[in-house]
Length: 254
Image (cartoon, rainbow, N blue to C red; front, side, top):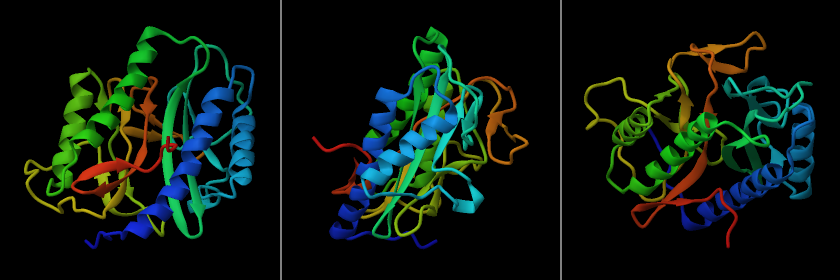
């Protein structure tokens, strides 16, 4: 497994692509409201990306038809924008990828539409908190399997389940590359496999189910739900390992 180690100038190029993602996610979080269709959300995001001179990297990737993944309620990831109208109490996952000058960015949030239930607030918080917990504990020399196990333990400790068969990933000159970073571990030995090193850049993305962790892909060949058909949540950041710790690239710099 050849996981690239990025130079400082390459990490800065990746940061530029990821800041565009972060700005667009912030914009949509502030402007997406009940009464909009998922296609309108997609168009709003694509227009904002265009104004940032960022190419929406998901559009056409593996045949995906739109600029943004809009995963509504039971759809945990890869939701295709449709004519479905958002309503008060919905929860919406927004996943955005960009490409600027040949370098890629990727991040996601799950947002409330208006006032949501306490249960849905806790569901969203699990994915977000799991992501920031994972970022906080990353250290050079830690194995990726150890990180995956920590994410799984965190999600399960909150009473939820990680979605299986989908995972975080490396990112750089391609939107997806080595390593794969699941939010769970199947193998008993987490002290095996590649170690985290300075210069690595990758995406962490906890995908949280309520009861069942097995995925079901819906008839459009994209939308992914859990076997329990209950609501799920998803959060993602792109991070770089710098001076032995993880630094978030997909956030707006202060």
